[in-house]
Structure formats: structure tokens, C-alpha cells
Length: 394
Image 1 (cartoon, rainbow, N blue to C red):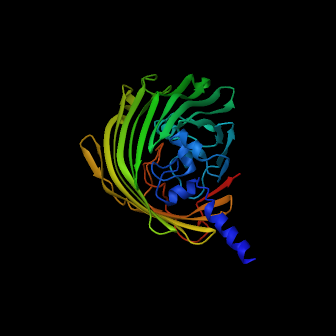
Image 2: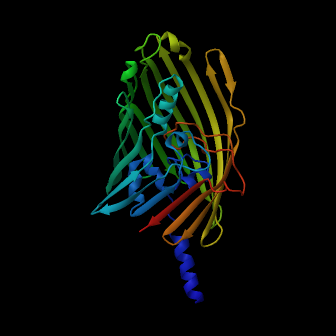
Image 3: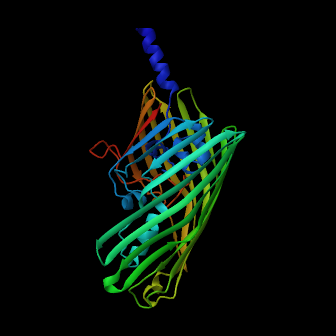
């Protein structure tokens, strides 16, 4: 009996299934993957990572609306999930329900100008395919869309299409996401108006290089949109937005003991946002904004026993500032903490975000270079578990 318990304990320790939003956020990372911590959600950054997570099922429980979840709402999350499997020498996977933060925030911004969009792009579907012919490679295509028709004269539609590619070899990862097309439309024929939001072709490029305990990272993004109002002064005149961003940094990972792994990340992010319009009613929305940030994250993950993992992190912006015109403001109250638990039962892992407190992460981030999507709750009440994730390795 004693030998049986020992074997079971070793199986539980030897079979970690790291692939959850709860785990990453408890370690101070973004919900869509990490540039230096190994986790199954890294497939959303580099689809070549699918080769490291074969035969897995991932479930993210929740009930949040997609609009609220896009800005890192505390508490529940939008339900989502998927699986990976093998086909000969290849690995494929399907993931559903993970909507684009960037698209959600673009819709929210247009609604702030009076667009009245109700068809938030959801029902997302992403198909992955990869292999290991000399180097690990992967690609994916994703799509989401929606239709909301409240009457014969009011029709809301939305659609998004994009693709990802990536490679992984000798500690080097190079990957890119391309947003091919996106469109949200509010056609109200009774008022003879059509509000339309068209996303420009977006490009996200990232690279990492791992050496010993360090991982060096860099990313570049460019994206934008054109909002055409239908019922405003100078109707039809476009509101154009363009964003360019880059980030560089380094992540450190080291096994402090046999049961404790320490993590740390330091990076520099810079972003410019430009909004232009000739629409007299919306001219106040036009602005040029520059921002920079230097966040530091320190985290730890401990295997308390054969079935329980404990995680925690603290994130803090060392320097950060936003400038809009002649107005400048430093980031304030940037410290956030998070804690989480992992329950390991052989091939089944259950992760929970036990609590978060402090500043919210950057809304609209497509990758894991922001702070954790922290909310305002922390404690042992009814909101103790903010995220709940299940992973099964079959």
C-alpha cells in the first residue's frame, strides 16, 4: 500500500499539464500566453508551441460577457476551450470562445463616439496545425462573427479573419499574427444611416531567445481602424485611428529548490496612438498619445505536495507615463498582486486564481507582455476563485 501511494505521488508530480489562464495570471502574465514561462496558452502567441502540448484538452470555465472580459474584468471569465491531438507526424488543435481583446476595445471605442454597435464579434473558432520537421513549426487561422437583427430595419453584423505562423528551434522563437480583415456594421435603414467600423490589416511580430535561465524578448505591433458614422454632423467622414507599439525585455526562470521555481520579468514598452477626423461632431476625439512603461514582475510557483501547487506574483511599474498633446501624467498605483492554486491529479489539472488586487492590466493586449489582468478582489469570500481552468492530458 505504501509503495502504491509512492508511485501515485510520483505520477502526479511528473505529469503537470500547464495550460491555463488562471495559472498565467497568478504568475503576473497576460491571459494569452507568456514570452518566457512554458504554458499551453503560448500557442496564441506562437502556434509552433502546439508541438509541445500534444493530446490535451483545455477548458476555461466562466460566464462573463465577451465585452466585459475583453477589458480584464475581475471575477468570472468568458467560457472557452479546445483540444490538441496528433495525426501521423503532425499535431492539430481546435480552440473556441477566445475572442479578440483588440476588436472588443475598438468596438467599445466606436460606441463611445455614438456608433451603437451591438453585434460584438464572438463565436470565435481557431484551427491549429504544426509539425517537427527539423524545426518546430505551426500555423493557425481564426474567425469570429455575429449577427444581431432587432427588426427589419435594424441589422448589426461583425466578422474577423486572421492567421498566425511561428517557428521554434534551438531556443529561438519567431512568430507573427496577421489580422487580415475585420468589419463591424450597424445598418439602421429606418434612419437612413449606416455606422461602420473597418479594421486595417494588423501585424504583430515577436521573437524570443532563451539562454540558460534567461529569455530575451522583443515584439512589434501595428494596427488601426476606420470608423464611418452615419448620423452625425458631416456624416460619412471617417475617424481614423492608428497604433504602433514595441516592447523589449528579459525574463528569468530558475529552480530555487526541487519544489520551488522563481520567475522575474523586466521589460520596456512604448506605444503611440493617433486619431484623426474631419467630422465636426467628433473632432474632440482626435488626439495623439504617446506612452511608455517599465514594469517589473516577480513570481514564484511551489509544489506544496504531490497534488497541490501554490503560485503568486507582484507586478509594479518602475516608470511609466502617458502624454497627450501638452498634457502628461505618470502611471500611479501600479502595484498589483495575484495568487493562485493548482490541483494535480495525474493527467488532470485544475487551476484557480485565488485572488487579485491592484492595478488592471493593459486592456486590448494581444500577448503576454502586460501586467496580469488584475481586478479589485482579494480574499476568501464568495469571489475567492476568479478564474477556474481544467486541463486533461490524454
